[in-house]
Structures are given as C-alpha cells and as structure tokens.
Image 1 (cartoon, rainbow, N blue to C red):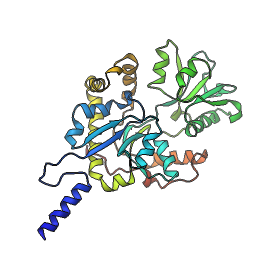
Image 2 (cartoon, rainbow, N blue to C red):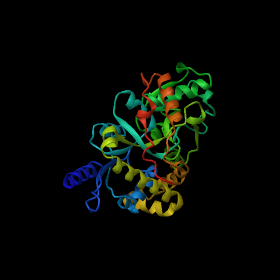
Image 3 (tube, rainbow, N blue to C red):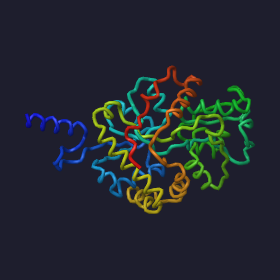
Image 4 (cartoon, rainbow, N blue to C red):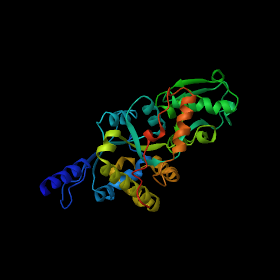
Length: 322
C-alpha cells in the first residue's frame, strides 16, 4: 500500500510540473511567448529572467518571439506554447470564438492604446475627426474604439474614413497618408514620432467611452491551467517579483533588459521604458466587472456574437501572496 501511495504522489507531482517531495528533479520547462518583438513593455519579464526570479521559483523558461502578434493566442490555444502575453480584448474575442484560453496574470493593467495625431493637423478633440482619414492596424476592436470615441462627439461612421495601414502606424502618420491613427501606443509610437522632431496629440481611449481594460495579460490554455497549476503559479509569482523589482530598482531592471537585448539600448527604448513604468500591473487580482464591461462593449459593437461567462475568461487562483 505504501508503494502505491508513493506512486500516486509521484504521478501527481509530475502532472503539476513539480518534482516529487524530497526529490531534486529538474525544474519544469515552460515555453513563454511575447506578444511582439522585445520592447519596454517586457522589462519585468527580462528582470525575472536575468535576476533569477524564475529560476528561484523552480521553472525553466524559454522565451519565444512571435512572427505575428496574433500568433501567441493561437499557439497557446493549440497547446504549442505553454504561456504567452496577449491582450484582454483578444482574449474576450477568442473565448467568444470557442478558443480555450484563460488569463492567469497581468503585465500592463491599463490601456496603452490611443488615437494619435500630429499637432498642427487641425485635430484637437474627437469632433475634429470629421472629414479626416484614420489609419488602423487591427480590424475589429480598433475600429470599434474609434466608432465609440467619434460617437461621443456626435460623429457617425460616414463622417470620417478608416484605412488599414497594417502595423505601419508611425510611417503612415509621418508620411501624411492618414490624419490620425488608432492603435498607437502612448509609450512607443508617441516617442518614435517625437524623436522625428514632431509634436504628438492623442486621445487616451479609456477617457473617451472605451472601457478601461488590461492592455497586456498572461494567458494559458484551459488544459495547462487544469493539469499544471503549480507551474503556472510559480511563473506568475516570479513575474510578480519581476514587476516589483522593476518598480523598486528601475536602473537594475533596465540593465537586465539590455543584457538580454543589447541592440535595444537606445533612446527610443529608454524613453519608452520611462513612459511605461506607471502602467505595469500593481497587482495580479483581476476585476470581474472590468471583464464584463469589455465583453459588453465588444458585443454592443458587433465584434463578438455571444458573451462568454466571465469566470471562463480569467482566473485569480494564481494571485501571489502579498
């Protein structure tokens, strides 16, 4: 009987991604995918890696960079990647489409997205978008954001024109191919443009009728949450340490980021990092009302056809102790 009980304990430990009690087995391996190329949003991740928080938590993490920002969510849902950075709106849309992804943690807990324009373009408030051309990168949510912002100023869809410029938001704006862009980040594209000697104006979307949402979230598949909860908990705990270290030791966290990405030690990234510091998540507990508000917004604008139960889209079971 003792042998059978011991075997069950070992089996459970392996399922949880942990070594059996009393054993010094290898740390569970985790494939973790960024949402896009390394940038200042990811400094806490590299702080957790370079300063040993992930290793101390007992996880062996391999960081991957996607070819497309839509890939991480799809690869997590397909079981090709264990954990990844994604976006709260993308998770709501994915769940409505039946993809089994769950948000298990937070990296940036307020929107970075804006409607951005050049000073001197004749735009000073949303009503000035009348007759203007607005570029966007991602169909669906970005279009809905502009509709909501314009509607508050009394504008209808026909009062402005939208064009898909892909992810070339900055060149499109600087090249005057568009009058404004929706989807540009206040901590990145804004700085790119300012470094070109131009002054930027922007509408922060959450101040103009778009629900406050989590810009960057950590996602896992339902299967990983179910079968490897201890591994997920360890990762979220180490990421939380990385965020806290970034906020408490800003210079050291920057050095960790640069050590992993030497080519990014430039003015754009340094200024972007300073602009991102106020937006790193101050905690890991997610708000059900915020998930509900965003789902209601996406449903009202026809981006999703059905709303998923809020408890299926996120979990707070991995919130670390204070």
